Length: 316
Ligand code: ZN
Image 1 (cartoon, rainbow, N blue to C red):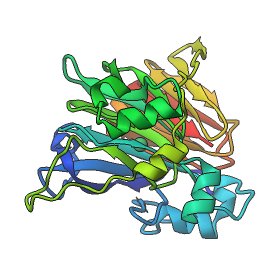
Image 2: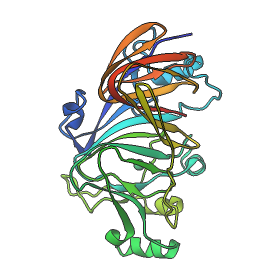
Image 3: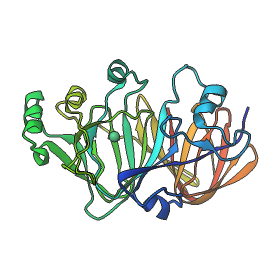
Image 4: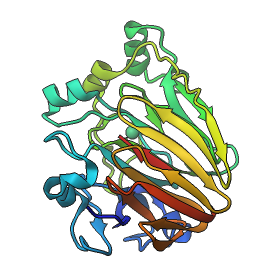
């Protein structure tokens, strides 16, 4: 049984709406000045993370899932279920919606739909995002889309650092300019674009929209999720439960001094989003710093944490 953290190297993705914060804030080597996404814990074929050290150095997370299921206490033949990203929105992202599992399977032949959630790592003063819509029924939704009444249709939400947003499949959404988020989502890359601000690329082309499929999958009327989970405190650590639902559990751990934690989940995905500290696994100490991402495999048991840092911890 492997008793050590599996550290992963992020995959950086260029996006037209991206910027340079992934280098400035997290020290990642970015491919261009418009880098939008770092896929930090990913087994998705469109951007698989690679193990950086230890017994499995050089292997992808997808290969570990395939060949070493015991690391995850894997119980099914399915794909690795989750994907964690950091997004830097230097410009507005297109307004979009994702299908649920059933629609993804039947219409796209893909294993998973996409429910996602966002922890806001940083937001400029007055930054907005879109979450849900104001249409009362399907007729009104279609009419507002046809007539391009976007401002009236979309629900705008102001956000600041530390906010948490849950985006179940079927929820219209868009991350706005000036927002950096950590996203935990189902491992899926299916997006239906509803509106792209009529933007054109350098050749004068607009990006493709997918209005028919978007209408199929959008929840109408929109209903806000009820996120009322607790916070637990113990010596050296505060744990805030952000969401616990069908696909994932996500928590924020604030470590302020030496502390211990006994893992009960099959495995944990860990993202260091602020500060510095250390983790002790099976008597071995590892340094942790902002921008580091790793998996604690099955059977690690009790860990020790220390330092002054914030972690986003998630598991299926
Ligand atoms: Zn999305």
